[in-house]
Length: 84
Image 1 (tube, rainbow, N blue to C red):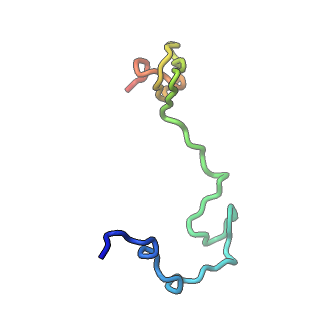
Image 2 (spheres, rainbow, N blue to C red):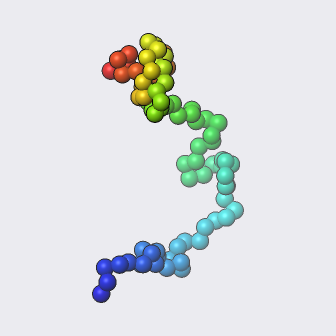
Image 3 (cartoon, rainbow, N blue to C red):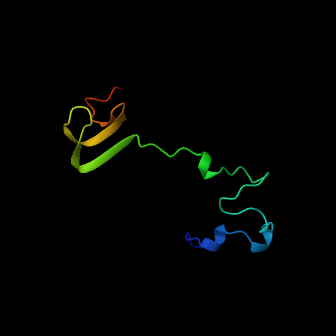
């Protein structure tokens, strides 16, 4: 017997799946019981915690050009200006 497995070894029989209700909400729509979906309007965008630049970028506090900068009160700052 070979140690190689086929992708079909990991997939269940299509008849085992429960039918999906295609009439339910889709995309960004919301309904009373929508499976925990949240409207994008109520979500705050992610904020970067660090940035890397191969050529270096200036620190927002001291102006030193560094490859790695971390989020500080002033913006992206070098490791020396970051309050750890």
